[in-house]
Length: 624
Image (cartoon, rainbow, N blue to C red):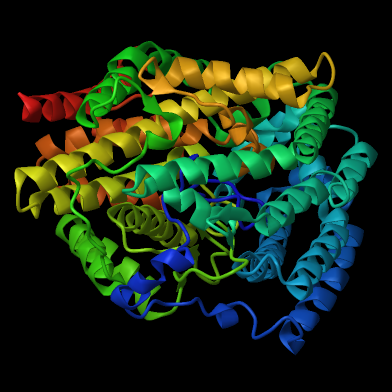
């Protein structure tokens, strides 16, 4: 999965309309003791502090080195390539080493900011670092641009040298960008203005969302604890939370509408200059996935709406004694769902046991996250919402952010993010240029980790009542991951397409949102007044346009992969770990071939969706 080194939200984010990992309200504070001690991350593996001498030295050193690199290599790459691959490989190695140190600085600033986005000092530090990194990387911008101007035949001959051949996957991916590459001065302008353009609007969204407060019976809550009430057993609290969210979103709708219009137009300008034909083509290119493959996924999911979400929500409405479910009841716990608080230590053991039963190496890697303070788990005021695993750089290690509250869904979130973390650790051996994995494949390890943990929890269920609750939660998570994310993708497509004709009003955005959500959720969900504003807080729309289909891609892929695992002979785990360790060095077709899977096969997506259908069938059988 690719990520912006200065954006902590770019990788492994979970915020699927209703959060998977949510912050606790003061009303739930009594459960804090039951959760036990939870880790907070130690960022000193990156830098000791924002004012550390090492950080200042790295910034100064990189500024000098970038200038020297530009002076030495600008205008020389074609000649070096003709002299042979060894000389060209020397420049790639230097570029790679600087990339690692730049990524370390950006990761540190981003993670520090994510831990408390309400702190003005951290926000300033984050903004200042972004500006300094942009200034440094502007000096390096010539390198990939000039590399892509090397003639194909000359580069092919240079790649016969082993030193350069090591970087062949990176070079191949770089060459895919060539048709969309602009003149150097335009690329430089785009790059330098990103801090005051897209980056500034992203930061405005983050800090605005963090600052919002929602009235719950006189208590002013931030967004995460308010969203958490949508999972409450008490229907009145769910309704009150939904109305509080709608009220505050409505009060701030003009700002979120402006942010959305501005970023959609900004993307359209970039796409037009680069020559992308479709609004999502730049994302497909970054994901190294073909548009027809994504189109096939979207079509398969939309065709399955009646068999998945429509069918399940009708079943759930019946369980809850209603003809229709109000939108605030969509993720409500079942009436008979056991109430439990899963302590952090218990969650740790559950996930590590599930991972260890599949592959001891996975559990060993995951254990480091707990033992070495690579996780920030507790709820804190100002902390970024949701959850993510940020890879940082290969010379360091990933960090996981969560807002753990002790619910089964939180355990699934922990399993999800640890899947990302294990993947990132294994892929780090590929180095800074080739470790990043396209979004579509990066969700494989996270969703597979969830599945392993779910199966572990299901095996421990003591009663049919508990089994039903776990199955229902899993189905809802799958629907949120597949159906909801494809609906989000559809919403984005309509917004970015319509924006080409002019600005969209808040009312028009709400109309599109309700239409898309209505089609995906089906007739058993009643979208009450106020829900038309709920598009405005989904961070993926702001930070990573069209990111969302990667969740559905990963879920369906893992469903198919897990089906192979259940029937596989010995050796599956080894092949699976090899796939993760490949990082970004292989295309999805090559990675899935050892498992007999092919995402370009029209039947591939149907196979993954049938797993969800079968779970719904099992739930229906429990009612018979």
